[in-house]
Each structure stands twice: as structure tokens, then as C-alpha cells.
Length: 383
Ligand code: BJ8
Image 1 (cartoon, rainbow, N blue to C red):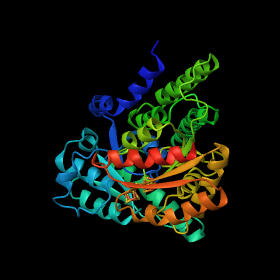
Image 2: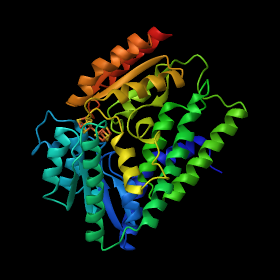
Image 3: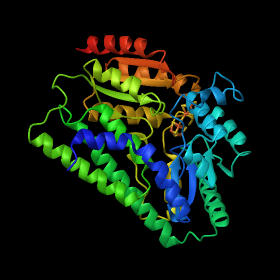
């Protein structure tokens, strides 16, 4: 049986191992849908009997190629994703039969227009207010348009039975993901934040949903039993950190590692891939399309205006996870998250009386030392 470090490393390697898997699935006749955002309703893709693969770039390698066409002062996630498509370096993009994007931030939605020249692209118009009826109706009709697009392109019928089964499956995956990250409610936590992040990132590159569910259940059970047997990977006095802001895939090694090398431990990820995407389920008792629309439009990403729900979610998590400090990650040129830092700081310092650190970074390694110094001082101050 594999040890915990071996299991976490396995999740870390999932992106690379998935290359072969996606090729095999493609050769077996499966359609592949490339997605970029938490707003994409995965249930529809599953119900269309296709595979959803995440195409958000997390590497700096393709950025120079992207910068030949895109402005340099654009978010690294956008440049990296575009660079992979441009250079054909990413098998997931290469094997995608259809790309799905949403009109989220300005950079992403304009990049999708360019991607549409390389691959079949479907863009969902995302309303930017989750509180009004018109926005909801518009989003529900966008969900139906995606359904029709896939039915037409893939020659399939998404039946009521299939969509309901997909909803149950993805809900189950969300529940076991939540059970996994909620392990860090324990004090001291039974796993390091970097291992948690590796796992949350790794499951995006596993395509058999029932396998993801089984692996996560087994991992949660193993972490719990080792903890009960006395295994303590984190010291009791390690400051408990909540991480919020932009997606972390391209900067986790730099930032999370710095927090944990400095004596802290990340116990909660409010970002996409963590709490933001998994806390709320799709209501299985309702009309499936209405329920999907409700779940996805309620994601409190900074592209929404107003975005009070994000502040409420943050407060809830700060209290639930017994947080000692909040670190916010801003990818360079991400204006929506950057402007929201004002509200986040006010909330963390004012309502919760806790320290807050905001780090603006990109995918390069040039600021690794500077980030380590700033995080080191932040953690030391808490100690
Ligand atoms: S739901 S966080 S995955 S849009 S690309 S907004 S970092 S400037 S990724 Fe996102 Fe969907 Fe929201 Fe989540 Fe900023 Fe960069 Fe835009 Fe970004």
C-alpha cells in the first residue's frame, strides 16, 4: 500500500499522467471538451458522454509565445492558456473537440475570441450579477444553448435521466472533496496545505469520476487513521492560514511552500478548486437545468458585481477554520480580484481583527525570494 507522501506525489503527477489517458479516451471515441473556468457546468459535458478537461495554463513556458500576440501586461493564466493552444504544446488542448469559455474577465473573454480561430469554441454569456431575475433567466438560457451545441456537435441526446445522473455524480464528487479539505478543521491539521493543494489540483486531470470519488474517500480515510494513530505532520502552534484570491495552479509551489517553510500551515483555500467551487451543490430535487443555473451563477468570483457573497463566504471560512491570518494571491493584471482586495482587507482586519497579506505575483520564479521574505515576516508577526 502506498504511503501518504507517495499518494500526494501521485496527485501531483496527475496532469502528466493524464496526457496518455486522454489520448486513449479520444481513440476510444470519446469527445473531449476543454474548459477554463469554474462557471462551466461540468454536468452537461458528462451528460453528453464527453470528457471535461481543464485547460487553464499553470506554466510560464508558453508565455513568451503568447506574448507575440497578446499584450504583455495581461494575467499569466490567460497568457499561459493561450500560449499552450498557440504552440500545440498541451495535449489536452490538442485533443479537445470543443472549447467552452464564459464571458468572465475582459482578458479571458477576448482571448477566447482568438482561440475560436484555432478550435471550435462555444462562449457562454455570463451575467455579472447573481442577485437578479433577468440575470438568472439569461444564464439558464445560456445553459440550454450549451446543451444544444453539444447535442448537435457530438450527435448525442442529453436526456433527463442522463443529466440527473450527472448531477448526482458531480455532487458526490463535491461532497467527498469537501470531506477531504475539511480534514484541516482539525487542530493541528492532519496534512500540509501544499499536499492538499496538490490533491485538489490533481483531481482536475483524472477523468473517471467514480475513480476520483473512490481515491478521495480512501485518501481521507487514510489521513484520518494515521492522525488517530498519532501522526502529526504539522506542529500544534503553526499559524492557520486561509488563502484567497486568484486561482493558484501556477503559483502554489512558490506561495504555499513559502507559507509552510516559514512555519505556517494553509488550512483553507477559498479560491476556485477549493471552497468557492465545492461548498454549494446542485439541488437534486429541482428541474435539472434550473438547479444547474442556480448553482453556477452563485459562484462568488470577483467578476461579479456586486460580490457580497464572497465576503460572506470568507467570513464564514475564517470562523469555521479558526484562522490566524489571511493571504491573498493576485495574479498580475487581474483587475477584478485586485480591486476587491480593498474589501477583503477591510473585512479581515476590521470584522475579524486578523492580519492580512496581499501578494501580487506571476508565474516566473524571479520573485520567489521576495515572496519568501514577505511571507516569513507575516508568519513571524503572528507567532
Ligand atoms: S470563477 S476565478 S476560474 S474567472 S483569468 S479573473 S486571474 S485576470 S481565473 Fe477564474 Fe472562473 Fe473566476 Fe474562478 Fe483574474 Fe486572470 Fe481573469 Fe482569472
